[in-house]
Amino acid sequence: MKDETDIPAMMSDLGTRAKAAAAELAFADPVAKTRALEAAAEAVAAREAEILEANEKDMEFGRDKGLSPAMLDRLKLDPARIGGIVAGLRTVAAQPDPVGKVMVEWDTPSGLHIRRVRTPLGVIGVIYESRPNVTADAGALCLKAGNAVILRGGSETFHSSGALHACLVEGLRVAGLPEDAILRVPTRDRSAVGEMLRMTGTIDVIVPRGGKGLVGLVQREARVPVFAHLEGIVHIYVDKHADPKKALDVVLNAKTRRTGICGAAECLLVHRDVVNTLGTDLVAALVSAGVRVHADASLSRLPGTMSATDADWGHEYLDMDIAARVVDDIDAAIAHIHRFGSGHTDAILTEDDSAAARFFERLDSAILMRNASTQFADGGEFGMGAEIGIATGKLHARGPVGAEQLTSFKYLVDGKGTVRP
Image (tube, rainbow, N blue to C red; front, side, top):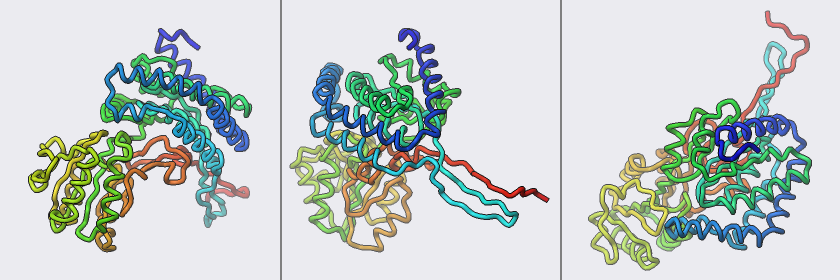
């Protein structure tokens, strides 16, 4: 490793090593990749105490830094969450290998047989903030898809990410795969991020996973292609035909289960016909649960609420706050989401099939849900084992980005001495 005080040299070294590893991974035996992930899972389970000790150092750093309770929750690891990391690694290990998978094939009149097959992207740079589990998720998914990865976690995850990265490297070693397949930037120096964004010769795509500030920085300054992962400005529209019990259960879970994740609900839209019944009950339940409800004029009369300002619409709180507004009908809800949403996840609560169909048809968020908590906006819950993020752009990958979404494709063409007239 190059001198860590010489950031450009250090990052150049990481890029060179990752590119060499990616060249080998492109044709690596799927059995070896599976074994590497299984061994990594075993290492995480065996080193639980060591990982928790490292995480406590990060928690202390985060508290000293003044992180909010929601952000500290994102940072915190406990035995259950480590168990989730182990389970995620094993799930990705058990998935079919996407590399070489035939997406479609056909014969042409000229006598050619053409196959479009999945192929690795190459080297992926992942820049993330408070969640140390991203280290394991990103490393596992990139490896499964035959990519090398350079991980740059936030300063607050430094020790946790280092401990988890060591487990991933142990898995590579056990499986006989290049240990440079999963690299970690070994410094808190922020200039390393700027270097990554300019490494066009060695990094094929950047995945930012974090808040608006991080993603905005990456999108503005990156010379490397970016998988956009914008804010989770998540809306829940309560239709006039919503089932009251389902609505209470879903809204409370979507807001309060974990407030610091990108699938947490940030804005509640209530149909005017139910504002004095279900709408009132929902606001009361949120207030009772400790949520600060930033309400419009129609709802701010309710006990425990506060008046919303223009800044509350389109705001990602990532905390025990939610904006709430009354809308005249489903089209007004759709218009509000078009104006203030981020294209991440939006939900409708209704028993009316035609209303659900209209909501699904007229919105184009990466994930749309009906009668389900937006906290399910997660690759693991989608059966992907884990996710590297939720892409809100419309090119290449969209929604939860799992192993399959971390591939591109190439065409394989077979002929029989075929020539073009």
